[in-house]
Length: 65
Image (tube, rainbow, N blue to C red):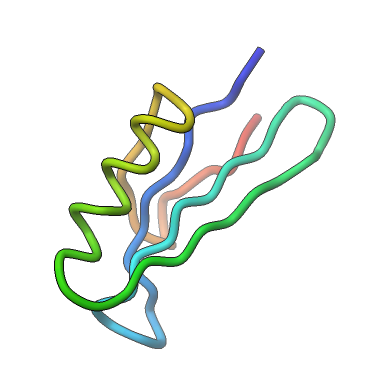
């Protein structure tokens, strides 16, 4: 079963957005978006690539079960 992708703004570099994803076998993928419309592009990418996404910040994000 696929886990939802997580879309988070980078703490160290505000304005950069990360799309993180893990599967049941502990494989992972990470994409970083920066520049104009970075948040919007990250969300679009996560939606197209993974179909399910979750928003959060580093304090309450879970990258899988």
